[in-house]
Length: 113
Image 1 (tube, one colour):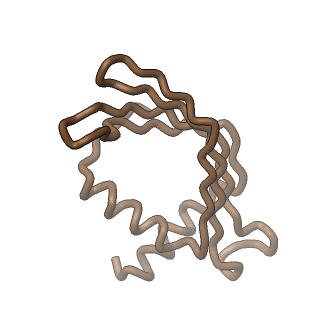
Image 2 (cartoon, one colour):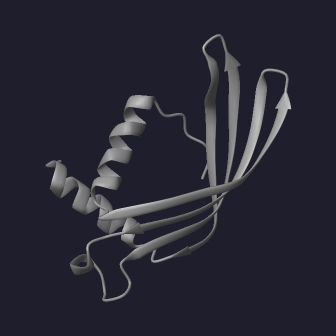
């Protein structure tokens, strides 16, 4: 998918709705590699993220959406310190991808929207 600029408020609303539908999550972000270009930092990190929906919302034993991949982010130095300007997730492996839709529907139900 092409990159899409998103306001912080819109991103937070979307993330709140998605994550409200998960019973638990665990994100391991490791092996950070940072390359500086003056006031710009390119950051690459590896990701393993597990997202569990309630067992009654999925087939027995298949209630975890697993995402493995990497982040390529960009940070910029400001007068207030370093700030992330761009985030790009590239999944290289996933299991049970349909659970994202399950979590979104559950998040809407929980949040009333």
